[in-house]
Image 1 (cartoon, rainbow over the protein chains, first blue to last red):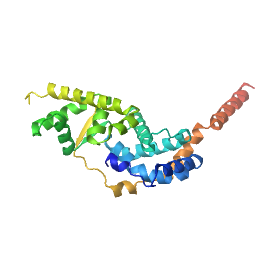
Image 2: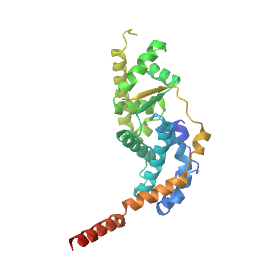
Image 3: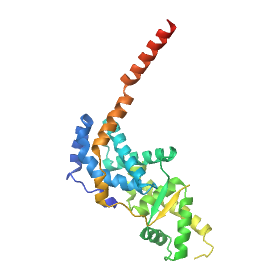
Image 4: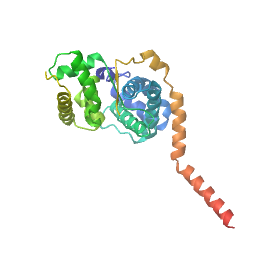
Length: 194
Length: 57
């Protein structure tokens, strides 16, 4: 699901979402519409980063449990509620990697590979695809998550910043650096210089 | 080691929607809340003290 679709509100206005949150702080059962709204987006975010579908469902469930437990402390400070949920999802993912309940995975399709090669100003070929697929897992976690969010999930820099706790500008700069790092790895592992 | 999956089949919207289970989430919140409650740890501390006193006497 694209980032733009995620921003579509089922309740019309963001204020409606805040009303539901306030109600859910008193009674978690009132959280149901928000669970319904964000379940798929959170699941897909998790699914792309773990190897097993069942683990993705389990982690998604843990994300909502954690969100509801921490909901009384949630305050709206201009950051969308969805970004707050994605932050919890990110933290739950890393917890499951540490506990070895799931394996860190990069899910990529042909279109996304093409998108990255386009950023490198390279046309697609089987060899270039292979090199890119070889070097992607070599990236460190932080640059990798920026590449995933920007080029695979097509999130805006603003959304990336909100999820990672960065300013929009900082997210842009760090994504640019991550892309340079990936280009360097690509160049090191590509014997046929393009 | 990071695993790479290319052109992986994603579950459909319906499949994901069918796996929504808010009831289980609510049950798990109650469990977590009771574990985080000061009453839970208070009860454990009180029973431990009681057992200890009983053993000493």
